[in-house]
Length: 556
Image (cartoon, rainbow, N blue to C red):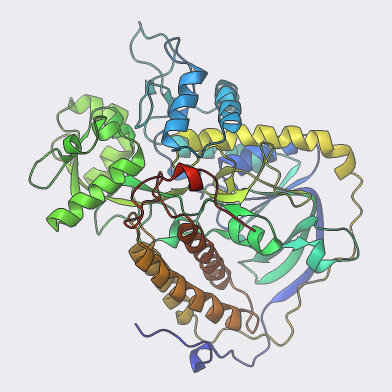
């Protein structure tokens, strides 16, 4: 497809009266952007201190969290320990985890689980009377013990449903569903005479009635999730467009480690299913990977076989697909009893059955897909970003927990743990935050902007970004591929920038702008790391270089 020139007629706006309405300010004590496990958990805690606004692009239920199948990692058994969980996390993180943060998060686990149970989350109970713990625990790749508590194979949905219900009915929380944050309001840009480098809230677009207004808050919290839609194939929902990372970067926050995008090894390969993840828990319970010829290829890759960390398994599948020329490999759990499969994986079993696949009798076709970003907005162990009154938590943040590769089921744990850490920090700062005096914040100016004449251009650029990232910044990279990606992504960023300020913002335009920003930052991080480590694998630098690169890739 021919690249679109920013000056071409396709980019011209209609010279008509804009339908966009600009409203005044709304004031809250706290603004939480994102409603997944991190954002919703934090909102419920903050609501004990003051009034909370929570903004989400879809409904409260439509988050990355709801699609998490596996579970939450935490230490529960006597033959396990915080030290072992920490060690497993450090090994998976390939030398880049911040050990102090890992230990802090790991030790928070049991308390977080008890809190969820207290809210009404129902985890799968143990089925054997002699088991030492009341809930069933499974094991996933990279873990040395069974420590994954889960709700069948729909853990994320079970947690999200309870949190969404609690948020929706809380008297101190106002929910803004189907609203898109345009940008953070930073004093350096909006009110330079008021206070240096402080967040005052965000400009927000109502998708339903096309109006932009200011949501002002004493504290602003990014919990927007990840950016899996940066890639052509992903397990993420359509809303995962990197909004938090892009807004924070534009505001002047540091971002780090964006080269570390984790590719989940097993996404269902089916033209009828969109982004359907096949949980790692299947391999934890004995599923094996096979070539289409029936060979168990993990035997020649890693002694841990299918329970090796995700980066190793994903690269092995990618290599097998390229070696054989086949479009997928097979994941087989049919050797386990049918009743066991149906009881442990009811959602996966039923969905596959709807697609004509019976996992109790036949293997599944699977491929790797972009799944989880280990990088994001740099924070300390309290979630602070370096910009006053702005915190980040969950997948949008780079806290030091995941390093160069996330250990399975540590993500939901991180969201819960950092909700507690951030809340404790806010309580310490509440006297100061409570005295915040707001300046007169400029309203969003429409000026002479008109409606976009051809939104198909946005769709084209979206597709170009995702294909470029998949082909050149995917599971296996090279200097030549990264250079090609950087050149094309830079051109796309320039095209969008030339267009953006001439037209009325829409959700689609905001999202493609954010995708382009995060793509540009990701390529810069990947080009800066001249080694292979964790999820980042370079054909030109196939080995780790601890002397030069055992450190975070930080962009300012």
